[in-house]
Figure 1 (cartoon, one colour):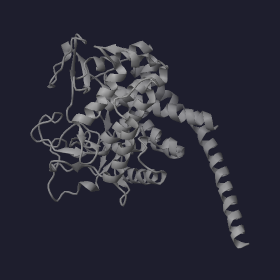
Figure 2 (cartoon, rainbow, N blue to C red; figure 1 turned 180 degrees about the vertical axis):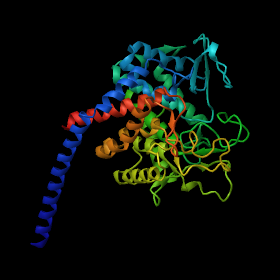
Figure 3 (cartoon, rainbow, N blue to C red; figure 1 turned 90 degrees about the vertical axis):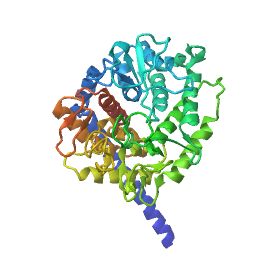
Length: 431
């Protein structure tokens, strides 16, 4: 009898909790739909998304940036214009399948990159930051977003120099498997950088592989690859026969991430697994550093359980509280000491700078886990500083609150536009 009473009480308590959650969600939905800040920022974002370069102070169109503002761009530009921009990256794809970082008008190709040219893309130059392993993943993600928004699947059948875009997308994934793969760990590799960053520790031209490069496995590259695999699978035409069993590769990737990169006892991801030695001194405890951007991408990739997501979020919130002007967009915490990372000093740029470009993705990460309240509250300080400084800045100094870099950074505008769109969509469905 007692067991029956306990069971009845538990069921009743669960029903009460469910009702309370529904009420709370409806209240939050109403708050979101009446939040005028969201409308203002979205409109300002669309005003900025009239171009494709990373920002008005940049000449280059980077695929990692375009991937994060393509949905906003499709609100401003005709679909054909956006499609042609994506196709440009395929027109200058390497013979081994690799995808470049950025494209620029040949007349403006005067930065210290090793430029690439193609007869298929006259008047344009391209460059690849070889320390990264996210260009291929970014382009495939962008293609899926284009298809989702427009419904135009014809892009997949477009033939470029004898190969369809669908085949070229597979070639890009094969490049990662052939050239950026650790057979030992069954994971994607890249040069040592800070989280999602593109600069090596040692002083000098830090965006290119050199004789100082220390190869490593990290969570960001693998999360981006996993998302791209899922996107490739999602857009694949039914009649198309793939080069590889991408489902099996995606499944194995998650298993290996869980085995080698997820530190279960600490509820966080290991910054790096080194393949040819560490660039840091033997006594430096890199595992104490929290990688926020890579962790958010890992959640989006589906690597974590609901309980683990909450643990990751708590750590990100705790890190943000340690600096006066920080949000969960702070790149890493604590930052690397200058003695370990001379190419980028603490609290500068990717070494402890605060980036809405990644922090704003928390909305996409949390909504599938019924964490709408947390998603909205984590986004709020990013919204407020965007309005305060009347611009979409690249990053912010967490010690002074000062905005840094381009004041017209399209990556931030795109991420905020999409985060707000997701919140509004959730609110409309919930109200």
